[in-house]
Image (cartoon, rainbow, N blue to C red; front, side, top):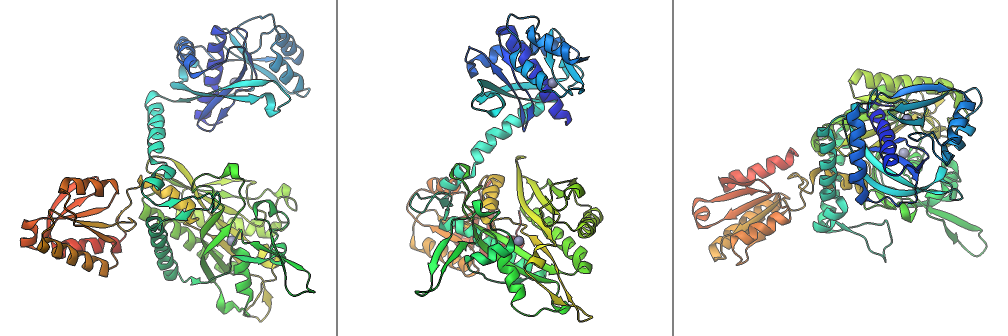
Amino acid sequence: MTDLERIRHSCAHVLATAILRIWPEAQFAAGPPVENGFYYDVELPHRITPEDFARIEAEMKKEVKANHVFECVEVSRDEAIQLAKEGKLAALGARPEASKFKLDIVERIPDGETITLYRNGDFTDLCAGPHVMRTGNIGAFRLTHVASAYYKGDENNPQLQRIYGTAFKNKTQLDEYFAMLEEAKKRDHRKLGKELDLFAFDEDVGPGLPLWLPKGAVLIEELEKLAKQTEFAAGYQRVRTPHIARESMYLCSGHLPYYADSMFPPMELAEGDEAPTDKYYLKAMNCPHHHKIFDAVPRSYRDLPLRLAEYGACYRYEQSGELLGLMRVRSMQMNDAHIYCTEEQFEDEFNAVNEMYLKYFRIFGFEKYLMRFSTHDPAKLGQKFVDQPELWRKTEDMVRNVLIKSGINYVEVPNEAAFYGPKIDVQVWSAIGKEFTIATNQVDFAVPARFGLTYKTRENTEATPLCIHRAPLGTHERFIGFLIEHYAGNFPLWLAPEQVRILTIGDDAPLVEFAKSIGQELRSHEIRAELDISTDNIKGKILSAEQAKVHTMFVIGHRDLEAGAVSVRLHGKGNVGAKLRAEAVAEILDAVRERRG
Ligand SMILES: [Zn+2]
Ligand SMILES: [Zn+2]
């Protein structure tokens, strides 16, 4: 348990203490820490609602203020059962009813296992711990919501009330957390996506199948431009593959039958009268298609490393209940590439991929990131992990070396590798501290062999390449969903769907001409510039540009026209002063070229 989890779980004991002071008949089941907080399951005739929170929290505060020690007592099984029967577990003392859930839990503890009780003040609970030293160590807490849950998650069991709360080391951290949640609500990509006309869903198109509106398509085009430039410079070659493939390929890749639940059901085709029916699947991954491209021509060591890149469209059959805005969709476009290389080339290639991630992080201003390096468990070779102990050891050592040498921030997580090799999940935190798993970077030493991929070595023998799967920008859908929230829709100039809007003060012909010629000049340099030459007053024009989150405004009045200048306004920052036309245009071009933040 982390320190924070310890605080939160201890707070669950304090919550139970408080509930018992108000409702002594309460029966408690489990009270673990969870992501962002804790809960305690309680059976109680009174239906707890948020209106009760203030009263419960007031009792909790007394318990925290009393600063009771969390005292650990070891008991025998018989003693624990006796206490439960007397109603004394998860209780303030003896009660007429047995502590029924605790009794059930004690009875299931295997013989010989140590049983511990924890006391804070007059409250005693059956618990394995750990806890903080004293109730006073719970710096700040808040109850958040109530849900219902069956005991042990089984609908044949009694239904309980699950009281959720959260706790932090101090009040500042608690306040920061709730402020972040508030801000995250305002930045929700589904809300901003609608307000900014970025994407839409339509029942006739189908759930989980986003339609990209022109302004959203701009984001896609710019990300692809970035990826293509970066990958070209890193020696990648681009390929194109169809969106469907025959069943036989997915049987070879191993996606079928294991992954069938996540794929759309097949299309059945009969070619010619006699032919047996053939099954085609929408592709759920690009890897098998790329393997086939590797295999399309004879390969020699001179071709390696071979880096095949594609913004590949994939389709996955997510359960409709799981769909969530752009974060969980059924169609996605992936920043995919597969690098085929020799063992000797592996470290350099893997390092270059990591460097690419870091380059992207700088561009997008992700200041906090973590690479989770998942390795195999030797005890599970042949079941959870492909049975090639030597290759596991070798590739994991190589990955670890790269991570250590490059000083990248990472943690190692045993037993979470993919079936066919170690992997790295890349987590980033948005500007407001919201966590997001951006992409996965995988080493694969099994699948190339399944596909029979080989190359001629220098010694003229046949060898199987290693394959690195990487997708630093993830899928457009998830990545843009994240960027919308990271930037709160205020995209940097290079990404902004509308980069510049030219607003005239009035609609005199010379002013309009001047505005049009600046607009044309910008558009000739592929800058997304629009004109607002309506007769509306300038305040209204500025307001509407601000609402649309246009990055830069050029405001033009007669004085600007005479000076050959424009008054520059930045979204959210206001007027930054007048500049000569050529200077203002050059600054826009520079900022876009350098993808300044
Ligand atoms: Zn406990
Ligand atoms: Zn792949």
